[in-house]
Amino acid sequence: MKDINIFCFGFGQVAKNFIKKLTVEKYNINLSTTSRSESSKETFEGINYNSYLFHSEKFDQNLVVKLKEANHILVSIPPENQEDLVVKNFSKLIESSKVKWITYLSATSVYGDHKGEWVNENSKTNPISNNGVARLKAESSWVSLEKNNKLPVQIFRLSGVYSNEKNILVRLKLGDVKLINKRDHYFSRIHTDDIANILFKSLSKFKSGEVYNLSDDKPSSSEEVTLFGAKILNIKNIEKIEVNEIKNEMLKNFYNESKKVSNKKVKNYFNYNLKFPSYIEGLNYIRNNFI
Image (tube, rainbow, N blue to C red; front, side, top):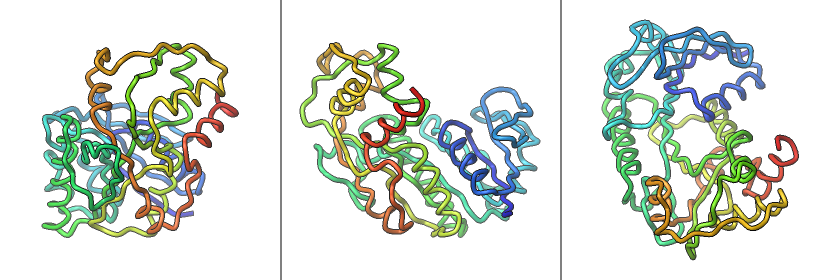
């Protein structure tokens, strides 16, 4: 049984799925996490762990001891005021630690709009949303830390994440979906199982300083995905609205950008075959097992 001492900044669906994968692979896990809530003792997948308060610049001092002991660090919290909170608060501590694997989860919003064309890790980063700008700045701060201090850092740019619990089928069943009328609008997605599998592979094939896109094989329009979901759930007559009728700011930004995200680098380097190559396999699996 392999031992791992891992500190997770943020413990949402991606981090949880990764820890779940480690339990399946029979790892002996020493886990610590952060939360915006008060510090607490928690249990996940049979693992007892401490969740430490970390909010902006306020954090539980006990966190420091655990962070120093960690040999793996996973960062999945978003930037705040265009700054990465982990670099801002803990860079000196991490520099002097014995960590051998730092993974920063970024987003493909760093590319901005590419008019529906393909992007890879060498494409121009030209973010147009506040989130995209903040993510790119956060990436830069991790890249600087890696270069200047010889720290082991890899970055994954995640496409639209969906999971067995959070997905278009759940939203369709709740009646929470509208079709947006936007021609030639492409975006990419990735299932949390595939993210967890690739993070796991990176434990034994880690290369510092690398950036990888994480997306499936089939960039598609939101309409295409929604209509497929509606078809397999036998839901008809979804309301259709124009782009200028969208009220939600994040959703508006989403429709300002169109790109197809290439996953060739990550699949080749980690010699990985996707569990869910497209939304078709992913949504069918979810419908058959969770809906």
